[in-house]
Length: 210
Image 1 (cartoon, rainbow, N blue to C red):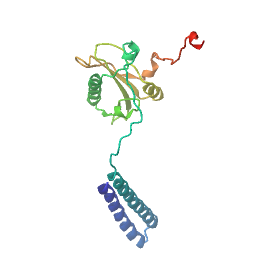
Image 2 (image 1 turned 45 degrees about the horizontal axis):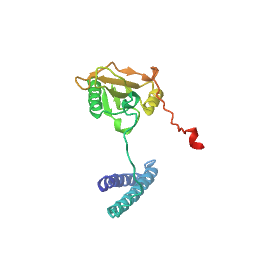
Image 3 (image 1 turned 90 degrees about the horizontal axis):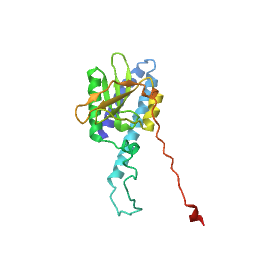
Image 4 (image 1 turned 180 degrees about the vertical axis):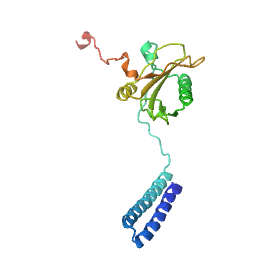
């Protein structure tokens, strides 16, 4: 923090000196530039002081007595073996293999690719062709076997529908043996995805009310 803000202050000091010289020589616009540089310098000084105070307060923090507010009991999902629930289980190893295969394909095509799956944007990769300017927002799905089913989360489906011009679906099969990237699919929202909806409800025996 000190190094970065001090470096910015040094640059503004240099600007102030340069604009001051230009103002003395009567260069047009130099006075306005000087005022802006002085304002930025003052703002940076204030920001550095605020951060110093914040860090000093953080340094004074310490762990005190822990007070238990509540307890939670975590149980397995009662329908965990049902197909619609099993599909929701992430397989981190399979996902990592699929991601690597998709990124390798993009690099082989000469595109610049970035892993953004941890940002919860509705897709896993951004890919940019530096020559044509084509942007791809890529959702990657991995399957351990030669075939199977893939699902989209509500967020992924929403982004796929909003960005149909550049949203792509990459499916990598056989991740457990020999990863095989299937033909990349542009605009996957055009396919008839099956919506899975489960209505939460409550029931009561009639006899319980009498």
